[in-house]
Image (cartoon, rainbow, N blue to C red):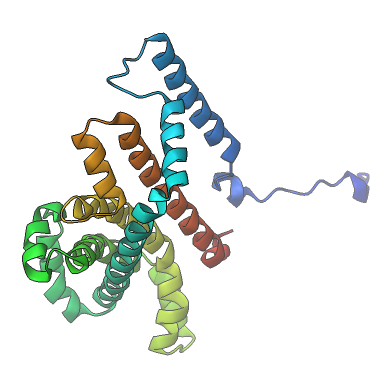
Amino acid sequence: MPERLAPEAAKPVAFRGGGFAPTSRRVVGLIVFICLIGFVELGTRTGFISSLTLPKPSDVLATFVELWQTGLLWKHLIPSLTRLVVGAALGVAVGMGVGILIGLFSMIRAGLVPVVAAIFPIPKIALLPLFVIWFGIDEGSKYALIAFGTFTPTVVATYGAVDNVDRNLIRMGQSFSLSWWSIVSKIVIPGAMPGILSGLRVSLAIAIILLVAAEMLGAEYGVGAYILEAGSLYDLERLFVGVTILSVLGVIISALITMIEKRLLRWRV
């Protein structure tokens, strides 16, 4: 008769489904970033990299500190953040609503998908003069450009995410006699949320690009206006300060979306 294993000899089996889950490695990204900055600093100091091509990161940092101390940083940053938040919020909210309606109703899909497909490839920056004519050269045209630029990618990402919801889950909800609204709110929307949030990353990146373009026309203050002024004077230190601010803004937005994903998508763990 075979011997029975002692309870302490049994080993727990790891959950195999977690093998493809991404693991946070923030230190690695920080190390890579520091190495890149160090390489550029060393290259510019030794002459390996021409000062006409890239400025010294230390000079860029000194220019940023000067911008901070003079108070000009907030004079440029606050208008940009206001335009970005207002325009992107309008575009994303309307885009998600339209995308969900397209995903749920065949008649709306038949009517709006061709329209979205027609306006999606249009370069939004090329429409800036038209928005200036419609909404004026003040804040209205900037809000409208950012909203329109984030609207179309949000619509496409949203109705694509709704389409990709597992139909077996919807059938299961129907078999338990759930109402239409219960199926939408408890199955369709949560199931589509990963795709919606992925599309939101793209939409907000486009919003930052359009923000800079909008501020280069008729804006006294803003990161885009600051970059345009620095570029016209060929002031590389100020130019790279503006680019760095936009890069940091993009990193912050990505981190916020990651926090939202962790909160809303805990069911995927």
